[in-house]
Image (cartoon, rainbow over all chains, first blue to last red; front, side, top):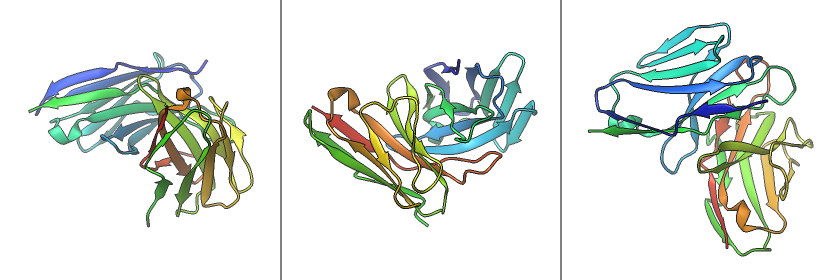
Length: 113
Length: 114
């Protein structure tokens, strides 16, 4: 079945690194995404990784993919108070004509000054 | 370029009332989606459309109807609202091609059904 799991809450101090984890079950997924939702706003795409990659780095963001364990992580270096938000991982299963995404439950990141 | 817009932003309904949520996109995207977001459950797909005049059911379609009469608009209807439909509703659109096909989200509509 299709299910994406995340821990609900993470608290870090400003300047530290944050690591948000995600597990998924559909091994056919071609792309995996990280979205950010700030309070009262919609979701904004942060980054994505293709399923044949192990790692992708984009400025302060590092995405690691362990396809064998179906584990995805997002590392935010030098976390700032502006990074406080809910982070969703999502997978795009292969096949079908919908391009639909399966979202995780979201991880609330709280950054303490 | 406004992206994806949603109206209204907030709404309170009584049980049994009906309403329509409007989503509009100006990116010429083929695909459009309606999601609901509930605490601890992430986003769940209600209905989606892969082109003008087409609609299909998602994960949680019961109690909702949709229409895509124009490419840029995707309407979500509640014929007889129930308290279980209290949620935040997000519309999204995407180009629809192969590859990453990034979904772009609207700001959401917060609906309360009393």
